Image (cartoon, rainbow, N blue to C red):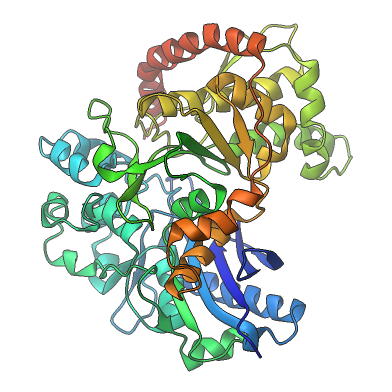
Length: 518
């Protein structure tokens, strides 16, 4: 039987998915398992490592139930997952406590102190990445002081996808994108001893695993992993790049010679420009954002990321769900999602000003402040629930513009992906707040697709990533949607107020945080 399928695994914050694609990029079947993580009042956001691997293996077994003779047909499995965070294992490859996720806010004060260090500007120029509480370097530095017993037991510090790759292959490694934006140089694609030394990790620097580029290298699945997943031992396993890079790749963030951007409207808001590494212009004043190596020779992605995107929409729709529940009416969130476009249409544009900093970890793009919090400005007794919904989405649009502006000019076209991008009203608001045409990617699973594309090049199905993009990505782009001129003009007048308000509120965030004892 021919090996005609590639499986892409995307271990996200909300769901772990295994997706089967044929070699031309057509999605064949999907299996998904809800992800589970735990939060506490001290800012912790953690996830059991063993649970994550078991859920991943279960999703592959589910996929096998849907596709006849799956094991014999799989040419390769590629894995990506949620970025940042710290997943520790000991010398016997057992987990050391639970993983610290990117949502974990405990290292916020450590990140703030490190950003003030005189050598942080040199670190920033190497990595292209602003320091925040999400990152492994900051979390390890924090652990050395506050959780020495945990870090002393550890042998290796993984990220999510690295942990899964290790379970598949027994190999300890990380990919070029996550390795370099954390501890390396985005222009060389290698670790930087200067950056590692910046964190004063000392002997703990041995926790950092080697870099493995999945475009060039893959490893065989172990017998143990085959038994747990229902696949065949020896199946090539490819370590994908971090989920943001894979999603950008699958959604069309890169097209040679064309000024395009990509916005991922997911739990976080990710705004991406892929270009030649040497042409990236860093925002050295704010020292924010990320620069991530792409699986394309000489290309890096510059990103600004909001801590929370659709999490804001989840919050505002959750209010409606709570009210319905208090009246004895059980209404699922999906019901309210269907009402979003109607609420948008019936609400006045720019009647409110909303800052979408709903995450307990504050904000990281285009500014970094672990005390940042959300607010509605301009509320009056005339406003109704639909105005809150529209204002929330407008806030996401202004946050996107704020991020693109920090990277230079807004691109000539922005490609959208993420479940919320299916909303016509949301796309119209994003296009108008950005003042540029948008194009939706109809690819349902861009992260898993991007990982599978890396596998397709690694296996030699395509000689270059450019050729893979032509077949897997370009046909999946919808027609361009141009901004409504009247709405764009209104938002152009509103945007400076958005910026002025967040700058004025920053001291208040710190006062509020101090009053809570943070």
